[in-house]
Image 1 (cartoon, rainbow, N blue to C red):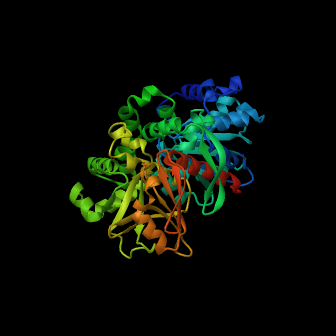
Image 2: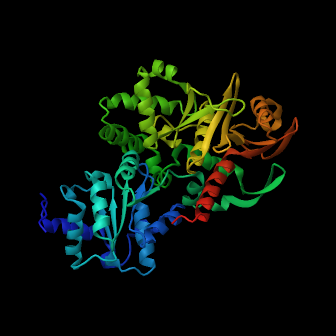
Image 3: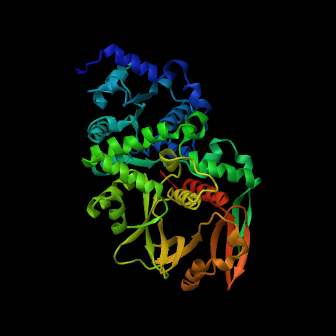
Length: 481
């Protein structure tokens, strides 16, 4: 087969051999072997193992959440289970050496590099696939043409991958979203699981299994670190990167999405306007906005604002939360809404690390709590707002259109001592016939009764850990293949 490339054929083959050291050594690089696997690995791996269904696995997610490392951990697991090393082929599509090559060209060169007649039974990993033009069309052809090969691809432009894989890969691709780290995964990666133990708390007069802190002071310190640095595995594990978040995270995660990925996908002409708009949102994460206020403060027209919000949400940089009234009813016309970063450490990258005494601490804790819930699909999360009252998080039953629970996110111990000051929460509970609700704190835990209501208090760090732990457990319990 004729392959047209400005790079000599033997140089490309040398690159393939370099990228696949296990062909000779039988194991992945020791750097990756030493890294703790993300807790999402056990959810992802069964998709890779599934060979009866002719589908490529598309590993999606924001930049720097560990997709490449998860691919290497997958290869490591396959090797440990006895897979032939030469059946595992990894290709980093973002390397310029593969320019002008299609996926089938690369497969042909891999066969030459391995001196094989056929790649039947192989697992082929294409990393950063969005760098290949029309990747979804190429991949669909490969899946149809080589049913005996399992294809696993990853890509960082979450918006592009979501859009293209759903449009063009129907019936041929299985999407798997790898989000930023939960607080539970942060604790896991830092090997601090000894800070946590399992016990029961009383919620709504029922004993509920819950993970609690052995040393809350240390856990709270790690929670603040998580707010500042906790979304990305490499940042968590490197003090050097933490000392220069602006250069590392902003340039590598934010700028590439705002200045390259989104403009190329949606044809955005004024990239600096989009950049300024995101900066404005990031600084105000957790605040309530209206289109009128947003247009006035940003100087951007309402129609453009709506598109920008849609694009940023598709790229998994922000989450828009809509509101309900005191009776948990939706508003017919959307005028006000809240916007959150999907990861609080994005704010540190753009501005500076947050301190516990800063005024923004409350909003960042709220952002962190919401970011834990974002790992659950199809949750109808809202917030309640009426007159002078507000409740931070309300979950709706999307079938019965009724609220299931309410949470008030506080980073203060004041409300444990004075539950009567939670006037909005009390009103909301009474309006919706709730007998209990959850309130976060800094240090206090327990149950307080007021006006026939029972408020369960948990430190915000403990609550955040539990959301992540229960999400992983729930996903593991599902039959995901």
